Image (tube, rainbow, N blue to C red):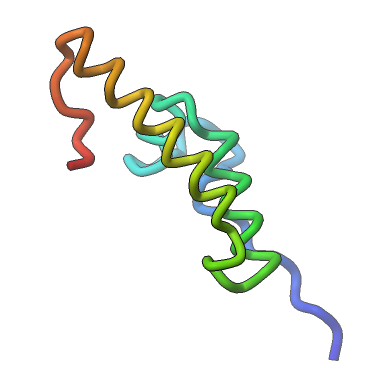
Length: 80
C-alpha cells in the first residue's frame, strides 16, 4: 500500500480570494508561518502532543497580535 498524498491544507489556497474567514484571520494576525508549522507538525506526527513547541510559538505570536490590537483600540479580533 503506497502512502496517501497529503490533502491540501485549508490554510493554503491557490488564490487569496478563496480564503475562508478562518484563513483570513490567521493571515491578518501575522502568524501564518507559525500556523503552517503547527499544521505540518500535526500532519507529520499525527499527534498534537508531539507539537508542543509549534503550538507555543503560534500561541505566543497570536497573543502578541491580540495585545497589539487591543492596545491600538481596535477591540476584539473575533477570537475570544
